[in-house]
Image (cartoon, rainbow, N blue to C red; front, top):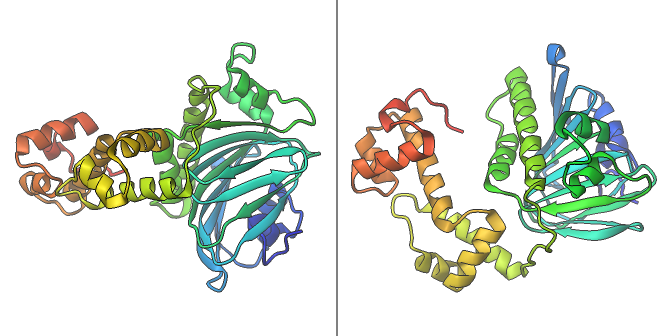
Length: 346
């Protein structure tokens, strides 16, 4: 059984075997918890738990929305493996993993290994426990949105008989059964989860931001069920995953002179065909789409925060002609670069 030192947030906040609700109920009195903020009118509360330097780095963010939604945001990396008992709590969890290496295993639940961007949606009945194992020295960037099945059915499912079977199994679960579904993490969900992890606000504004983005993230997840396929998700080797993630780093780091597919493939050690297929399957967008999105986000930041002239911004994101840059910018944001001064970057 995990102890406070070897576990994750439940063990630290509520002790070994503590439930999600126990952990949230302990936020006000637990050691190591800081930045406790409340928004009484909207019934919101949040807190942050910093990972001790001797154990790793990063932080956990906890937000409770009313009595029905519990949000856990992780941006952590531990020096040693972490194992934690997760008691059954009768909740539905939407687990959005952007990066990391997490294993979920239990006596009555299939072992699930999460080491790629993905959405895992599951219902854990009260009588079924499992353990989470987090690999050492790997950055976990993920968002877990936990809701009661009744809340999911009442707020996000118009008609259970007409809903996709996988969604219906979560909104109206069978007692004593661990239901789960793997779904692709599309670009919109990736962006929304990133906004929760990298919340730009503090205090009450951070709470309202988290509430709004969480609800939008749930909408995106529920909508994805309509596109879910029964075919298993393609598995990638650890080397493939490293190469594909490295490709994102290469593209995000070369904004003024975007590399070609061949150049990226050579840089990460993959064939062009494997790179293009794997990148699209893993991240839900092509290399060009990702590169363009990064460049346009950078352009918006330069216009908004550094007030650079549009001609210089065009050069900074790889455009030799301002007119071509303006066209691309307008397609991305729906307005001209000169009108973007008052637009908030996201």
